[in-house]
Image 1: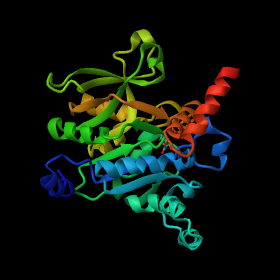
Image 2: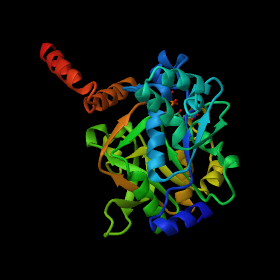
Image 3: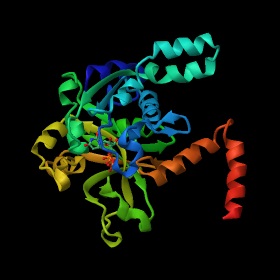
Image 4: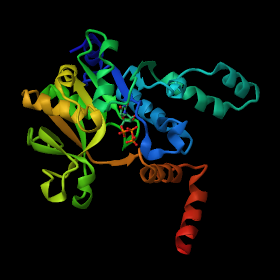
Amino acid sequence: MSDHATSSAASASVPLIPHTAVVPAAGLGTRFLPATKTVPKELLPVVDTPGIELVAEEAKSAGAERLLIVTSPGKDGVVAHFVEDLVLEHTLSSRGKEAMLAKVRNAPSLLEVASVVQDKPLGLGHAIGCVEADLADDEDAIAVLLPDDLVLPGGVLGRMAQARARFGGSVLCAIEVPDEKISAYGVFDVTEADPASPDVKRVRGMVEKPARQDAPSNLAAAGRYILDRKIFDALRETEPGAGGELQITDAIALLIEQGEPVHVVVHTGSRHDLGNPGGYLKAAVDFALDRDDYGPDLRSWLVERLADS
Ligand code: UTP
């Protein structure tokens, strides 16, 4: 276990998530074209807050101390969102716009932020592989949060850290998906880990987008991972798959083959996929309905609109 984890775990007596939370944000976002021609998908707002800021808040709440963004040439705005803008802050302050000022200051104040560049979008596995050189020698695991996946309510990363403290290795997040939707997901083949912890399962394998009748379970992968540092060796040994992309699921499959422990924590909340316009719209409506400023008006408009359709 790393120094970061031991020193703080002693005081909190709860296993911490890794020091570094990696957020891959170097993809092309093709499902969101034409918007993503110039605006990074990760900065599209859920009501008024970019998805990547929501995910950074989740990482902070779980105990991460450093946000490591994987970005690409031309997506500088993603990292800029986490840098203080003193001119804007001064303008808002001098105009007495304190509430706006607090919103603008939120992202830069959350975590220490660093970035690495993935030159070409060669897949999520390749993006994660790009961070290895940026980790301290004593970091024995990383957390990975996909910024287009909102897993609600928060707290699953903490449970995943507990599972890693107990079983070792890597821990992923799974959500239950109804049979008729399962073929859209990466699906886990699992076995019981311990009858006393039914929400934690040992992973035997994974199948990408199986036909409904071939799905080994109804547990689908959600975008949260705690990956043991051994993942970097596994990535080096993994061949790129379709489209020349290096898949993280292939590297995880290799870890399993090598006998490394891989578990999932089954999350029983909701999840929004911000990576496509349909999922993004649902997230925006869901979040807006819960807001005092936009919720009531949106609700009555939706009722009228649905009555008309
Ligand atoms: P996605 O597959 O959802 O993102 O990857 P994408 O490739 O940008 O989207 P489409 O399929 O073209 O619409 C999940 C996360 O992994 C990052 C993405 O930025 C996204 O946050 N990613 C993906 C990388 O950082 N690098 C890659 O090469 C691929």
